[in-house]
View 1 (cartoon, one colour):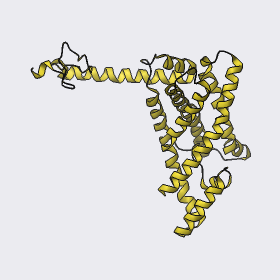
View 2: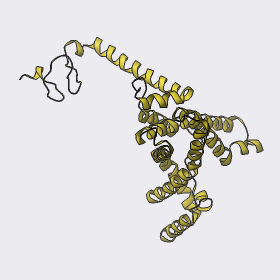
View 3: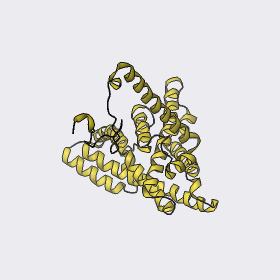
View 4: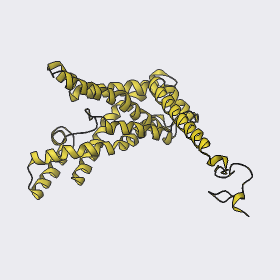
Amino acid sequence: MTGNSCCKNCGAPLKGSYCHLCGEKRLTIQDRSVSYWFKDTLSQVTQLDGKVIRTIISMMAHPARLSNNYQEGIRKPYLKMANLFLIANLLYFLIPGLQTFKTPLRIQANEQVYSVLVERIVDRYMSVTGESFETLEVVYDQKTTEVSKLLLILLVLLLGLSIYGVFFRQMYLSDAFNVALQFWSAYIIMFILPSSLLILIHSRFFSFGAISQVVFSEWFLSGGTLLFSAVYLWKTLSTFSRKWWHHLLRMSFIILSFFVIFTFYRLILFLVTMLVI
């Protein structure tokens, strides 16, 4: 059998312009022309841009429709949730200012339920290296910022498990992970990015007074995080509950689980950071 009658990708016999097994297109002379290259490239870029814009708008304005469509199998008009999360993650890597997922060493050692464990590990590290706590703190806080951005996928998995725990009759575990990807993408784009820009503008052009210290404090931003999470998840998951009080109970469980999720995430963040410094 000649090469032209077989798929170049999988070797299956070709019966038309496209392989019936893998979908690879049979290249022709016209496909190799510069004019076709420009048309094909423009088409691919336009299609991708359309999906990106449509997905982000749906994520922001119609979160319930996006999550419901995605679960029902209407996925062609949208980006994959994993790709949306990668875009949001890239923005999080690039933007300065707010570092919501970073926990400094001093907070790890004094304000967490596992702080006793942190103190033991830190004391052992200092006894071996001879470093002071202040020296370790500087190195740790710089490194944990990088590590926190790499561990965002852990938050996706933990939130997905929490969502599945209360919606296991309405969705598969993979559906719950898709909702979690949608949520964290929305959180980065709709909360972290605006907050970071606001902090950056304020620090450049205004002085930090008493009101500013409260508004941009960790407690205030944590409260904003919980409020955003409650409102966005309520809307996103609203189509999966038939009765409002069922939905209220489920949302209460998920929001309360954030304390467990962030506690476990911060513990893993501490352990991984200590391993790489």
